[in-house]
Image (cartoon, rainbow, N blue to C red; front, side, top):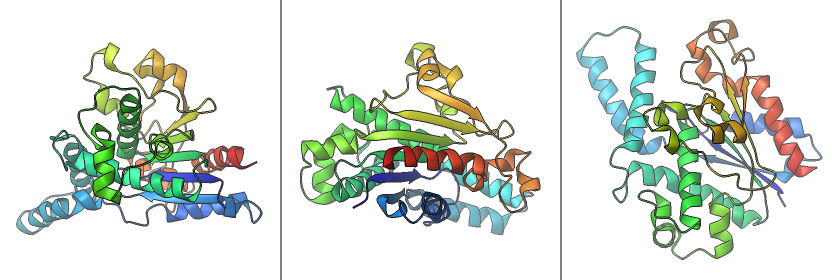
Length: 286
């Protein structure tokens, strides 16, 4: 029986469904033959909610005009369309915001079904950090009796009836709210972009889900989409450990990535990410 769940959430831009396969393989390899079977891996995938429309726009531009820096433009189009789509009219039923949260909830329900006491370690990248943070924030607010305006936690029972055909047990709801989350690693995190226009008093992080919760935020100073979190507010300073790294040194063509903004796509191939993630998981297993 698995005893730790690793749940990944991808970032912005064009993303294949198997985006986490390599990092999952790395974690199993680093745990070794005696412990690897105790790790259950789940990958949240929400890009398909957005990608068809984004690809349509890109194809039109590509066919009907001449632009330079195609790959950079495509990354910007897909990436910022993701961010805009997730926030646009998020309060309406069936919004992209709600559908993306539903993918997180489904994966957590799968982990809960495998072992309802299994601690969760989240790995989130780029826009996925904001997606996951919003999900957990909404869940905690709903569990505390507050009113949630958007997403699955506006009516978790209604979502469950539609998504899985039944109302969830209290144990399942607690699990879906991150109630067993022991670790969170964020890479190339752009939460500051979403909260920068807020008044300081409204910049609040999630509450620690468990007493042993540890949030490690890894960012490359050359990555303009990856940010430290501690400067956002006193609450973030207390909750999060920021760590600057040089992402991309372990990637193919690392010399082209590790010293410039292309490092945003290179975090999960770097030992500076893989080693502490393995340590976070091992801490829960041993």
